[in-house]
Image 1 (spheres, rainbow, N blue to C red):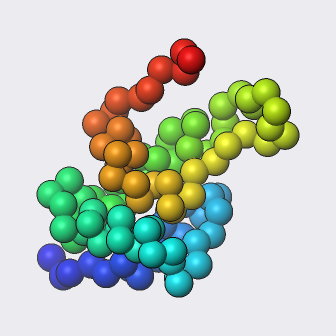
Image 2 (tube, rainbow, N blue to C red):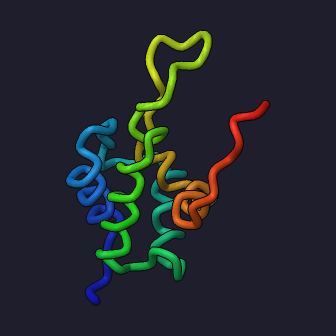
Image 3 (cartoon, one colour):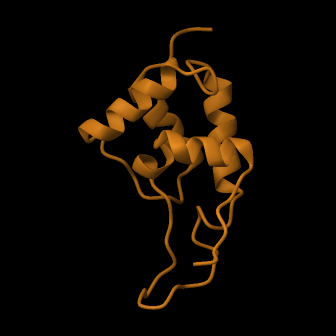
Length: 104
């Protein structure tokens, strides 16, 4: 498996998650650091197919793509973006199939 770069992860995100907000290639430091961390982790690592599957799975999740009911005070449903999808804790939830309860 060829090493996957941060820029290639961004390209996969744009390819697979075309309905979600675009992400500037000049990523915020924290987003870039999160992706670099995830590239070193076993769960996704530098495996292109794992990243593809992760983004495809995210696109099947109603909350990620804004298909959940609107919340009070918001005009539009929330949708994920690459900064959110690159937070390691969010990766754990999506890859592990765990979802937080909406109970407040």
